[in-house]
Image (cartoon, rainbow, N blue to C red):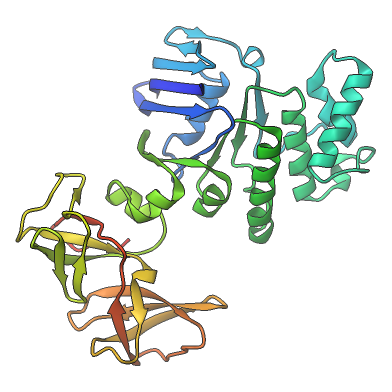
Length: 360
């Protein structure tokens, strides 16, 4: 059964539409993420789900009960929703244990104390209950905020950019830990972020937002390997779009060689199948272009970014087009050097040809 359903949700500030006809549903126990650039409407949508803002049209349902419609809004405190804020919003004058217990209200003291102790152990803060927020690190404060949101066993947990105040290494580690905690608790959750690495680490499903709309709601693998449109291809991961021509229905001829698909080539955004001779732009990820010293196809090294185990090369082809290639770092080539490459793509992602070649 769906824990959360959004049907045609619209939100406006004056005449400006911020959320434009959003539809999705989230099953109980699932973790979802609203991912997109600043200003795309993701935080506004989260606030609508929480009940902090009314909606102009559509409907939001929690466990099949309507909580938001135009002119009707169940207050946040009656939605059984837990919220984890960007700045943690802990009470500085309360101890860790008191902060976590705050959401339990009038629950009997013995039951509340047991729940708090269980949660502190779950989030890795056993023995820290007597400390105050200022005595904790940022990562520990985030765990307290999560424990407080989980304490009353809400129907839904909402996380608003929960890791944005932390350094990169801690963000990546904590996102994995928070996912494990939510899964252990059996919680249903939605997180908002602009960071795709956080989204991939946390979420079962991701909704990529742009201009108030969900561009694609899918699992992380499909967002990366099967983007629904150019915006998703551009926003998720790295890559380039190179021109090609469809041949024999399942082949694309391009400068790097021939790409073969198991099924007829589909031009995303426009039509189901592309006819022979159709001009397309083909999405190539860095792992689709392989360094091969034996290949007769040569490319010039324009830029290189050392990443420890790998180097991300920007390469210029004979035509002047540029591609990216992720190469093991023991292949350390100089700027201006020419190296052998070959195409090794598992499947074809093609878009109808546009007049200007785009980099993504």
